[in-house]
Length: 537
Picture 1: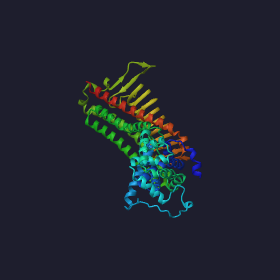
Picture 2: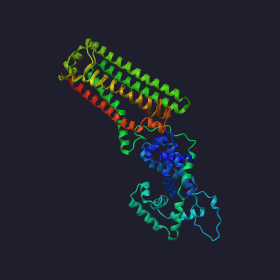
Picture 3: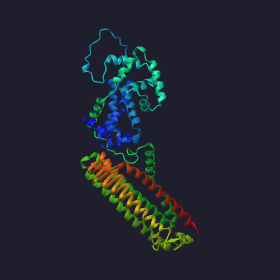
Picture 4: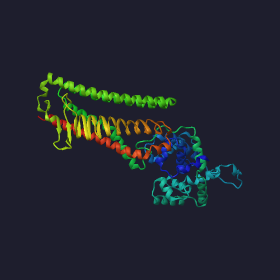
């Protein structure tokens, strides 16, 4: 009884919200899903099997399977069709397992029938004789007319409900029901309609399903980006596109940065150093991803050690941050040293005016200044010992400092994009800012593959003071939502409210899109500018 007393808290919520709550372990939410679609699934199963008892058993199996595999539902808005797909598979398997035998025999009713103790029957059951007679009539109808007919009488004779359940127009439903009625034998019409109405699954069906799943843990995977919090299919698709674009933006940006670096190189050893440096960045990133995915898997295998493994995951994150800092410092230092050596040992490689020390083609400083600071300062050549950081309102270079925007290896600006970036809004391999984004992000609001902040949102691991949301490991003081969640409130409605899940996901979609654009566009522009300027003679 307690199950149904609590249903009011989730009644009326959309499918996507119910899926998110169910994934977080809220069984009342899944009870509402069962209650919402039990008539549909039982009716479709009965239309296929012609057996009330078996049809309800199959429908219950479908709901239990849905609970087990709910984390595989990629678009929560398609919950109904997903459940119907599971049901049809169960029906097909039922046919394969059942020994073929004649189930629909002609029933000869006699005046002397066995007396059935009605009090012993379940509330929704009917006698075997009546059921066989009912199916004898319905079996003569095509499924095209039988399914709407069964649903019509089980859905309180509502054409609108049947149209919604079968995703048909109301006119089409009316036509099929009309045709179905004509196919019923006149003598049986009243009996069939009354029997179908009373065979509708009720509260006992929902209780049975919830009892069956009581010992089954909820799916571990919490729905985050592009998942349960989206309220419409359009938003889901847009969020998925933004996530995909952001995930490949690093690869795209790295490709164009590699092209720019190779265009800056003048000797074989310089090109070899560039390729070696880029390879090392990818190797460290791959090791980081492998480590995080592996630790997440171990949390599933050894749940009793989830806290220890989650803390260990942060050492992997720290390792990536340290390796990136060391690699950036070492790489740029090595490039400067090698360029100085190559100018001495291979002076013929630097005869073109664009490659001479101090050449104007190696940088652009806009003549317009605001408060004594150039509007733009862009550097295009390989770093040398004589270089100073690019500095302007908008700056780009190996080391870039911008009063508005900076892009480069190490970038510092209110809005900065770099391998390592500092500012108010930052995007980078390592981003530190008020709103920090990147492979590893630090900030009041932090978004990344790994994120650390007051509120953290990440794909692999999130650590937040107030809340953390992640597709992998989530740790926070107050609220955590994730495949592995550690907090005061974990994977439940309270956690979703504290984390402001729906607002966070709206924001994350636009942040992901901004990340992609701010990484890809400057990388393409810089690569083209380097190629054009460094080829100039």
